[in-house]
Image (cartoon, rainbow, N blue to C red):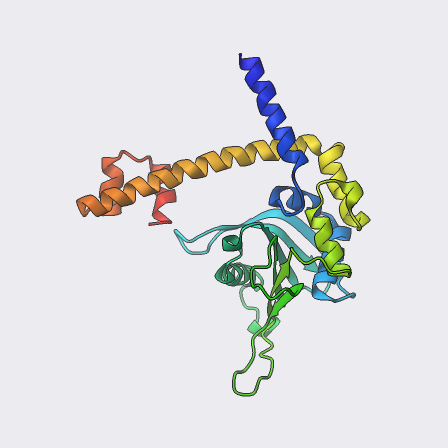
Length: 269
């Protein structure tokens, strides 16, 4: 019986991996992690800048909040170019994951790590927060939405170096962005236009990297289960606080919540 369950679990993981595309952040992060060639291609197409020279790129980079109890984030891709500019690229299947204030928060977390003690604010490098969304969340049918700041009175650019870009993953135009988004939606490397992306997808889905991809999917399942457990616990704590007019500490004490869980829940309460 146990052996059959293991085989079923293995088949389930294999099916999940087979169905993944670059719109799945686990696969996307692995394909781009350390992959200078693919990252340069991505940024050059999206930002329409042919002179970008990426010098480093990491996938699934965690940034901790400098505030005790603040919200930490995990970046799908964090890259840096030869000019010192920083790039965070995120993929999102659901619109709520790409909320405009999510972009603002990620951008601020990047900025807060650029300057060392004693550096002048003018030394702060440009940052680019790029969301690639599977759907056209703004609904205008254009491939790319570029957000910069402007003076309202003069309509001149307020060039503070902060840039936010949304890419419409549903765009199907016959151009570089359309082909890029086509590749992001492909489940098989053979169907992709760009070899820079196809090589990584093939490695992690069909070749030596598949085992690592399967392990990541299994860990993701564990994370989802843990997240669901904490969400349920959080709801119960809130219900008890409301019904009994208790503080968070009183409610968690009555429920015998562990210290580790308390620390997690207090970030949300």
